[in-house]
Amino acid sequence: MPFDTKLIDDLVRVATGAFGAVAGVREEARSRLREQFEHVLSRLDVVTREEFEIVRALAQRAREEQELLVARVASLEAAAQPAAAKRSAPKPAAAKLPVKAAAAAAKPARRAASAPEAAPAPKRRGTRTKASD
Image (cartoon, rainbow, N blue to C red; front, side):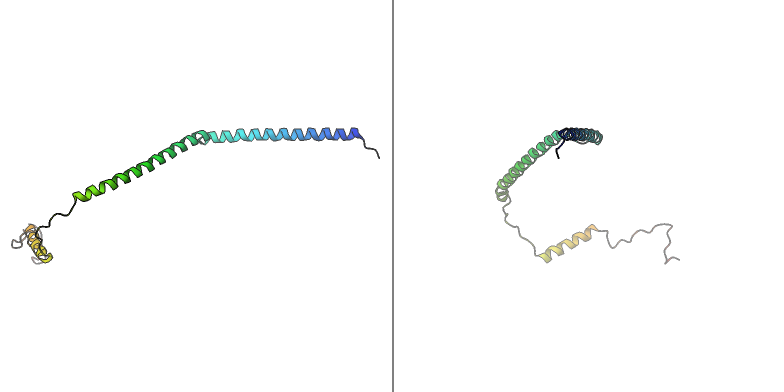
């Protein structure tokens, strides 16, 4: 049975046209979706990729500078410790009292600071106490 080439050519043209139409519809849908996403993102106040990369580079540079400063402070503190140790060398101790003697010496000073015990507290006028009832 011989094939009809004209029929096959027509079917190929129809299929090619259908695939072309589908590809066109796909591209149209893709462009519409892209427009919608851009519209939504513009309302959300989202940064662009370029802005993000700039801020990222600034943060990286700030981190590197901070690490350098930390190392510099550590080296300065290490250099300052021997000098501080020389300045704060122990001085000759003065005659120290034993712990009990120091505590006993502090007690009279506390008593002197408080109100005298011999003088009675002044009475308030117009106040009644249980003893006077």
